[in-house]
Length: 367
Ligand code: OGA
Ligand code: NI
Image (cartoon, rainbow, N blue to C red; front, side, top):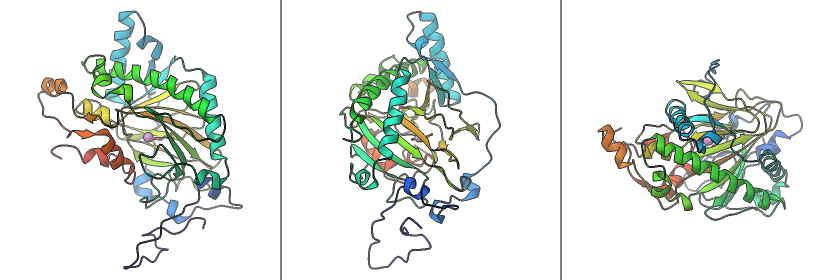
């Protein structure tokens, strides 16, 4: 088997006196390219009962928000779109964004340059960035190599884009493409967040100003899901909600994302030239639970390499997030979540195993 046995696996013999040696995992890319690989190592096997429930055959399409109407100078069009945005956030937490103005060539370029990054020699990738959640560049495999009990069939690179821009030096064109892409996507995200703010009955700039989005955290999180010989046993990313406020995701036209809707998993088909948007835990906190961050996961397949580029947008790292007082008063119920600095939440969520909405549960009041 290509990985060393982690603590707690049946293959390791944890000693009572010595700490376990740090794991050095090979990437899933290398593993998937092993000649004649026909089954997956047991450390990649997720328990069937909890992770492989049937997928809904619902044909209910996820909502679509036409971004050009959100920025329309016709007040009627804008308010209609804001109502639709509010319904999408309330009922799904996920929606497509069309007519966003980010050129298709930029979307293709970022996917291709991330593919080139993953194709760099393994020794080079290993030397890039750090391992801590707040390191501006982090590259690796699974979700959190040091704590994951079951490994995800996924390699990743996460790069902070804002308020400070970072880029790996290789591939050489990464910097320019990432800078352009993240700038354009940030404009779209901030405008959608303004719309979300208004849809909650708050001032248009309430979220932007309260959470200091001028210095908001934005990263590029690129995911590589190589073909898997036993896709029904593995998981690209197990069910989770995203930290932050709004994630905008694109992919290389290979499906794999599933969203939980009305208690069932729903396949989300890629639609060219659009973003898949989802609200994160901090919109749930700020809205005092009116909008819920939604569970989603990535499944894998045995044929195609899947690449997705998620761009999460969060508050400024030092911003303290709590339910908006206006929403708490109007609804007449107490704040459902405790106040917490975004940075601390990020360390909590990214430093743990990916486990549903367990990080958010920890700051919920009265549960
Ligand atoms: C993520 C994520 C889903 C996908 O990166 O947080 O949910 O389809 N990705 O890759
Ligand atoms: Ni996610």
